[in-house]
Amino acid sequence: METPTIKGVLGMLMASLDDDNDNEKRVISLGMGDPTAFSCFRTTSVAEDAVVDTLVSHKFNGYSPTVGHPQTRSAICEYLSNNLPYKLSPDDVYITAGCTQAIEVAVSILASPNANILIPRPGFPIYELVAAFRNVEVRHFDLLPDNGWEVDLDAVDALADQNTVAIVVINPGNPCGNVYSYHHLKKIAETAKKHKIVVIADEVYGHLAFGSNPFVPMGVFGSMVPVLTLGSLSKRWIVPGWRLGWFVTTDPNAIFKNAKTIERLKKYFDICGAPATFIQAAVPQIIKETSEVFFTRTLSILKHASDVCYKKIKDIPCLTCPTKPQGSMVVMVKLNVSLMKDIKDDIDFCFKLAKEESIILLPGVTVGLKNWVRITFAAEPSFLDEALERVKSFCYRHSYQQKGLLVHD
Ligand SMILES: *Cc1c(COP(=O)(O)O)cnc(C)c1O
Image (cartoon, rainbow, N blue to C red):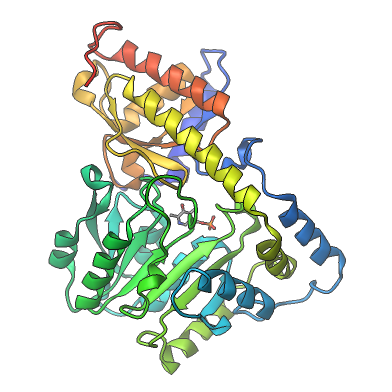
């Protein structure tokens, strides 16, 4: 069977609710990674005001250069350079329609006959989709659940060959909620250097780290190995609909970015169609004026939500969460189907859960792990609480274990 897509499965789960809502419970979706559905996740008024200002200025109704508006490139350049041991150039920064388009650019620009790319499992399915369209072979390495979802570097060594062009690293992680240590990122960089491949660093959740490891951008190792840094305003500023992202050559020694590659990149951007000019033009003000208070508040909500989620899952039979999330907005939870009476797999679990409890979770198979589910904890606390209570009663109902007889570890 073709792997079902995230949007496809979530659509079917929602449709199954409409067809036959045999219960009156309010629908709570912890399936999608879009926190704007919950009122506690609102962007800062600084961002809204910045967009209003650029819109009513009448100065930004025209086309921008296809690689991005110059002041936008400069602002992102400065924003990213703040966390690096060297300075990027504004020319390293290309403005994209969200991080999604940055992924498309990265994979497309690296595509060549027989090329293959190393992708984490579980991962973010857009990489597979783009690779399929560009005829790039995908090779999966595992993330290790019992090691904080670190990259299985032995697997990377075994998979890489002379046709390997890149390794994808998503940090902070979707779907696992991992935040990698400096030490682990360095080992990834060394492995990439050894195989002479580029690191595609998906840092769309950059700075959304609330555990013990601080967020370290992969670009810190840019002098060792060329890094393509991908990001967007979507997650940190909670504006996924604004479609403002970036593709950045974090490559101070110009190993990847020779004249020919830059020429090719510029041509590729001619067919991309940059995001709305007035959104681009608002970026300098957004970056300069957003207060630490906004970021701290978002992190504290996410930390609290992830704690609630982790704690509640510990009390649910048949579910285990091997690693406490340290960042992003999502966590992977393992289903022990052998302890369940009438649940075949993760798809079956999610459809029955939707039907009986009106709760939407994402089946793990859509991100590469069968019999796991992905839970988005970026939700209103009261919703999250209620949702997990219903998951709990669902699990009791469908497991062999009876309430009160459960042995906790
Ligand atoms: C959300 C997400 C993206 C897409 O970001 P947009 O800016 O919304 O296009 C890319 N990669 C990962 C890992 C994500 O979670």
